[in-house]
Amino acid sequence: MKIAIIGYGKMGHIVERIARERGHDIVSVIDVDNQADFDSDAFRSADVAIEFTTPATAIDNYRRAFAAGVPVVSGSTGWTSRMAEVEQMVAESDASLFWTSNFSVGVNIFFELNKRLARLMEPFPQYRPFMSETHHIHKLDHPSGTAVTLAEGIVEEHPRVNSWTEEVPAADDALIVSHIREGEVPGTHTITWDSPVDSISITHRAKSREGFALGAVMAAEWLPGHKGMQGMDALMSDLLKA
Image 1 (cartoon, rainbow, N blue to C red):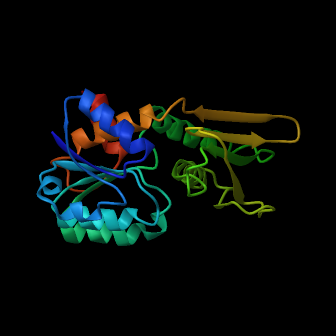
Image 2: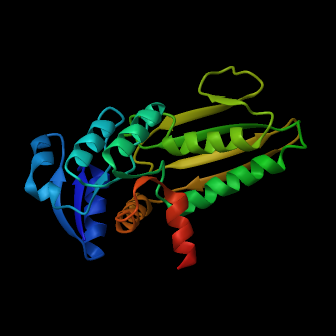
């Protein structure tokens, strides 16, 4: 298939390599210095665009890709407070947007484990959860999109946690989410349920960006023919049926 890349940082380079290894053609690469290429014939020829940029630029990138008739797979985070706006844009454009906070298969298993643990802890009020996430120094948003998804999973599944916050101290019903930016860490997320006598922790630690890039390319292979807002739940469901 023909793939366009939007955002040519470290993730963009890895996506390009993996897409080529899987037999795809890269027909356009758009970065900060060639934004006019959104209007090019090469970009319009793409079957799908894979987008990893910044919270400040992602939504406009979606808009310009949809105007060119190109579906988008995106891993950009930090913009979800504008989700309703994006959903309306996708609907009005009759477009396709595959978005997830994390394309890693392992992380999506971790999402389910996190929600299961939150349900299991309901009868034990002596435990209070908190979360920490660590990423490379180039990551601009915090907490990470993955951390937000994990936090929302706990809020959804545990009756004594009604919100999440980065502020300390926090209300008793709020999950504290802390972040660290150091080195070239691909991504580590730990949820701990702490009590006066012990603690229970689960951790997902990415070893490289390869898993994220592979998941994004797999999503790009799946997206054509699927209209509207899409995500990992649908992709994972189809993969498990295969």
